[in-house]
Structures are given as C-alpha cells and as structure tokens.
Length: 314
Image (cartoon, rainbow, N blue to C red):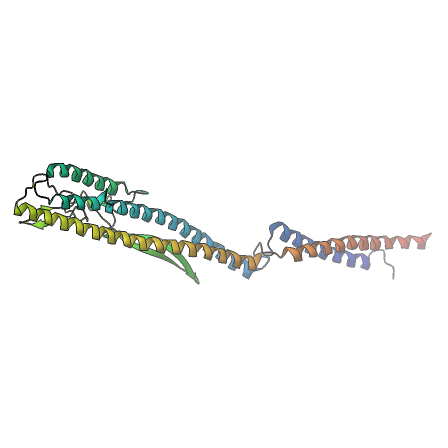
C-alpha cells in the first residue's frame, strides 16, 4: 500500500543512517583521543581501573622526585665525609700523619700545631657546609626546640597499593651515625668533638687537641700517643659512616630505577585497557564513511518514492 502519511522505507533508511552516524561519531572520538575508553560511559569498569592506575602512577612519580632529592642529600653528606677522611695532604689522614711526625724528638711542635689548627678549621667548615635543603647530618643541633635536628630522617623510597590501602616505604637514616659535630649542645656527642682521654694523657677531642706546648717528656709523649689513637679511631668511625651512606646511596639508586620501570609497566597496563587500536579504527572509519554515504542515498531514494503518489492524481 502506498501511504502519504507513513513512509516505512524512509523510516528504515533513517534509522540505519542514525546508527551509522552514531558509530561514526564514536570512531572519530576514539581517533581524536587515541582511546577507546575515554569516559566512564564507554566502559565503567575499565575506566575505573585505569583512573586508579593513573593515580598510582602520580604517586610513583612523587616517589621518584623524592628519591631524587634523597639521592642529592645522601650524596652531599657522603662527599663531605670522604673529604673529612681526606688523604696524605688533607683531612684526618693528614692530621694523623702530623701527630705521628710530632713524636719525633726535638721537633718544633708549634709549627706542626699551625697545620693542625688549619686542618681542624677545615674539618669544621666541611661539616658545616654539608647542607642541602636546610638539612645537615654532620653538624647537628641537639638543643631542645623547633631548631633541633631530628634524631632520624625517613627517606621515601616506594609506594604500593593493595585494594584501597596504600603503603609508603621509606629508608630510615639515624643522624647520630653521621654526626661529626654538635651545634649548641651542652654535651658534645659528635665523632670529632667528643672529649676523651684520662688524667694521664689529658682530655681533648679531635676538634680541640693541641700539641704546641708538648715536649719530649714521657708524659707528653703519652699524650701524643693518646691523640694519635683518638684520630685513628675517628678515621675508622667516619669511614664506617661513609660506608653506611654508600649502602644507602646504592639502595636509593636501585629503588629509583625500579620506580621508573614500574611507572612504565603501569603506563603499558593502562594502555592495554583504554588505548584504541588505530589500525582497526582507521579501517572502521573508512567503512562507516561509505555506509553513511550509502545511507544518505537510500534515505533520498525513500523520500523520493512518495512522489509517485502524485501520478495517481494526474
């Protein structure tokens, strides 16, 4: 039956064209965004998982930044400790050699003391300069109050999430292990400013020992022996502290590389969930464009078919 009010063919052609246009719009969106799941309405489950994974990656990025700052801090302190140990021309190693030289009978110890004083000043300066971002582990403030140096520092090293529970990993560094000097402290507890000795050898620290007034007497020679033993022990303690920092450096370096690899893995996982296959989408686009053109032609033909009704009234 030919109907003037209802054109079933045109309605069918229009429905088909609408479907093709909708699919074409979806394909064009995927091509423009590069994602097949760009909103929750595309796939609620995948969108939710991808959003959580992106959040995790942002946290991992923050961990990576924190590890970079921690690495710079540890490297600064490690460099200072190595400088304090020194070599035959500087640092504690040179100080030890000068004290051994001072054991020589008849030597002018006042001139040696001039070198000793310069080394002591340089050691203090090195420790005070080992500051980064307001942190110094070598010259610590043990006074009470807000200016006191914390007894330990936690260096953020990792992030993980199981379900909805996040876990932040950290590397704990104890300040006392590396402290060379105590600032504003009633009791000196640093490696180089701790006073040791006895009534026979005298009381002094590596930072304050003086040999300018010593003579060749047995008592003064015993004092020199005590100073040499004290400096030798300080070299061992500082070397142990540097070794600990070296281990921390290696751990930070390993964690930094792992976090970067983990971020890449998470990115790949997100891509597998939401990224569009551009080869497939380009093929689909070409096919849908042809279908759209054919749909327009089919609708045009269906609309024109009603014109045949006019011939019935001629």
